[in-house]
Image 1 (cartoon, protein in one colour):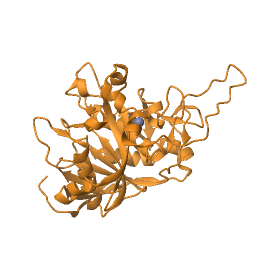
Image 2 (spheres, rainbow, N blue to C red; image 1 turned 90 degrees about the vertical axis):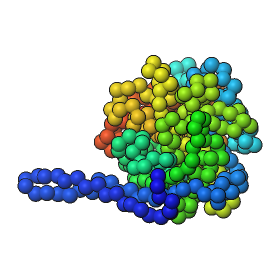
Image 3 (cartoon, rainbow, N blue to C red; image 1 turned 45 degrees about the vertical axis):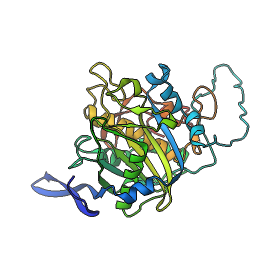
Amino acid sequence: MKSNRFGLIAVATVLSLALAGGVAAAQMVTQFQTVNAQVTQADAVAASHVSNIRIHVQLRQEALKGGNPAAWSLAPGTLDRLLGNSPPQSSPAIVTAPDTPTISFFPGRVTKGPGTVVVSAQSHSVFLNCAGDLCWGNPNPNTFLTNLGLSTFVHVLDQYAGSTANGRYTVGTAVNATFPIYAPANTLSQNDILQIVHASAVATGKLVGYGHIYHVFLPKGVDTCFDPSLGGGCYSPDNFSTFVFCAYHESVQFSDIGHVLYTVEPFQWPISSTNPGCSLPPGTPNGQVIDSTANALSHEFFETVSDPDPPNGFTVPLGPMSGFEIGDVCHGPFANLSLNGHSYAIQLEDSNTYEACVNSN
Ligand SMILES: [Zn+2]
């Protein structure tokens, strides 16, 4: 990244020419605005003055089952308490016993807390330290987000968002962000990411609030860790002992620009040739990088919409999945889903309507 200025630098227009019967037809496929952002001292000051921090983490189940204490610190409920966020106030849990033994209680049923949900939003991809923004595959994740927004799959969210409108979730301004990351640790702290998010939100012209979701994509080889006060767990496929999560979503209140929703998308990469870690195995429709990135991203996107200020949106109120959001309930298995005519290997999402993990509403 060489540019150190803010502002609109490029509007990429991809034209595909279709020849039919000797007539050339130009079809505009996609169009993404891009701005540059370099983190400054002002962003560092802003990152140190945030309030109302709410975080929900996509944990590595192996780390949880293995008893890694850093994983348990980041589990829902525990993490909410560490952050000072009380569990959602809901009416006393009254569970009606099923009348017949063939009907079982669905453990993934979610209920809504006192907070809001995201009825419609633009996704703003933040490509960190990557000239050309193709470090997460070609095409970059904006194409997945576009197809997701036009899919039937995204309508699983209708029951939670309270809208059935098409085209509610779109792709907004991409940000090419620059931030110094130092070897040998190559690790971003929570504060580093807050600085990057703040700089990116300023660079878009302060697009903030519930209509905007930033997705911060970390380049390959970069780890990120939570503060020791939250258990210190990391995304670190190069350091197995601290590697406890795959991605997360968060909301914060900046004192200057206000409420910002964002997700953190580490580079999805295997621990070893025999252990995929958070990534998918090879052989998926778009290759390992694009599909693994899409899988983690879609989990965080669905959860940001249904629970933007964890845990005050939709979560599982009780039982073995207590505190889970809709992505967590269905985390693990993946399927080849057709999104707007394009196949991706990603997980399903939890539906109260069907009491199951589903691929459409
Ligand atoms: Zn999750």
